[in-house]
Length: 166
Image 1: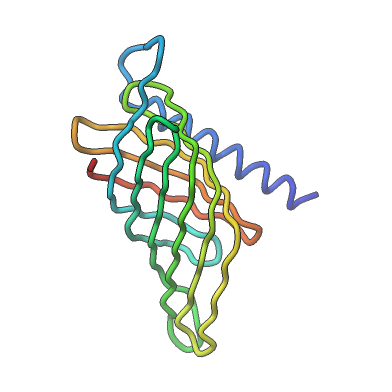
Image 2: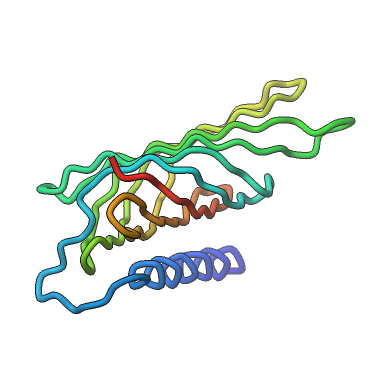
């Protein structure tokens, strides 16, 4: 029961963040939101359970007519190992459905895969399915702010980033 409550709280928090980010920078109410059709490449920082702070690159390739995007993040961080810290690499490719909510603003939901590698004496690796929910909004003509929550059976990863539109 506690695990269910914890999962429900995470999804609720992710939804609240996504909706808050979706309305940052929106000035007018359009009858038909246009969303943000461009892809981008950005830098992101965040926090992952059992790892702590992570940072790296994220990107989006958009297919606006289908309202679908391919997204990927390549992140790194450290975990406590005995006697020193160990490097961690995380790769997360996802396919998302983009929901335009305002001019230059989308909320997205999707699924994908994650792969984690730890540079420890055992060369620990883990992988599996991942669910993603987030939001993105354009700032000016060339930049975008984005954030998302990523959820697995083992925990969650939250990230925020600044991207350059392609």
